[in-house]
Length: 383
Image (cartoon, rainbow, N blue to C red; front, side, top):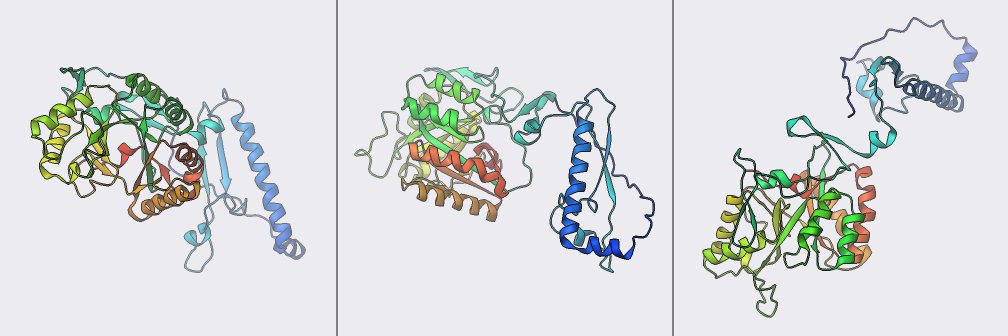
């Protein structure tokens, strides 16, 4: 496991340099000469750093990198202005960084994050999630295992969510649903999408637990879809376990528990359809009370945005209402804009081939634009 030693910043005071001749000063004032010199010095520093890292058995080296010596090319824009005195002259010092005795490679340094878990373990971005069921988070129900809050108060929403550490950037998250019915699309979503993208599974799917196990082994956190009554029901019928707007609360809970017993390993549920059900105060009250009692999150596609409650999140965009690559790209950019404005944003989509393709391409570059790709669980309200 990578360990980093953090030392208080130190200042190295360079010895006064002899004055340069007038000719030398004119040479360094030439922008072409100055740029070449800066580039050469940067290469010298880089080669020296590589030489130091190359021997992991050597004692922990000290590396001094001066921003002035490399022309500010490795520093953020505005570094001179930020350090300037009242006179406008920059204060340039050298920071001292002590390298780890066991340096990591470039792939580990830039390709994945390390998150400290409960109990002191470490979670890396490419790691699989623990196989379900986890001990202490289930009890036997009439149709199978049902999620419960553990004796220590930890919820299944916490236990089965993908670990996440915010880095201060705006967070963008996506839920891709409709999985488990089409084997090719399900496999493509699991394998081609980055593990930070949350996957949502249909409860009627055959081999549902196997699909969820594969998704978690690839690092994806999982939601279970709950069929809910749409406005055009029964012409549009989501199946025999659809939650109905006018049903007694006990029936809503009974159907919900059947859905929940279909598999283990999900941190919450999401809606499938449900425009009429989610407009019902009585129906939603019974539904959310049952979820809260079992320690599960509820993430919807935006239709229940006005509903409050703990462990809740609503999508701000359905990214594939129009099935074209260009339209999906525009919606993904709109998700980014929402994150920039509010600090976080959630999009929702279906496992159409074009959706999976566009999302995979988008995810490759979204963090280079200043965002943090996050699992949906990282966006839920915990009030």
